[in-house]
Length: 281
Image (cartoon, rainbow, N blue to C red; front, side):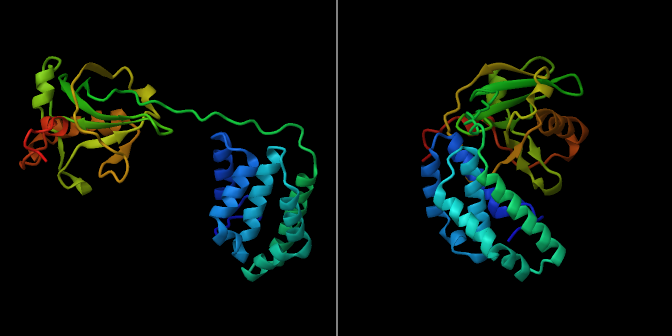
């Protein structure tokens, strides 16, 4: 049992069940439907002596907050508090007398809360979807430390997640003037030779959680056609949230500071990542 305090919510089971309850409610499910779903899907917890109490506490608290506390759930929690079963679990886990006394106080206060009338139900929150900032195929440019223009290509734009993601390939472009569409199509992907990167191509999923920091540093020149579909599931690429640190600074390091150390092995090309060969199966 992952527990970090005597509070009702200070354990993994409560946090997980309560969090899932709230998420399902915000997605549009009704309280009775959510309750049955969580009971059905968490029978191992419900049947586990050390975890069951925390499960029912989470269900009860969520139902109470939405002003739909089920009488059977309330009776279940009353029994737990009155028969001392929760304190027995804590005692078996080695809790001290001081901790047991404090836990009993917490249980009684929690039950008093459930027995009280909540004035207003907790409001259902609409899930906010953060859109990816770039479109699939966007060719991006930014100033390098040497004054030249670097470049990156957006291989994918994912809209169906809480935080919109873009899969971005960082290129070897290092142009005196803004690169052309042909420059991007013929470009190679920068190879990361140092540390644990082990000569891997600079391709990563980007989430715009801190995009305001770089909106003035990056511009979209045009869009090319990307014929492949890239999935986030089981991806071999990592995730980053800072365009300036993980892309622009990476380009500066590899193109300028350590240009003589870059891998001499064959690089991945933008063309191979965007265009399907007629002969490719």
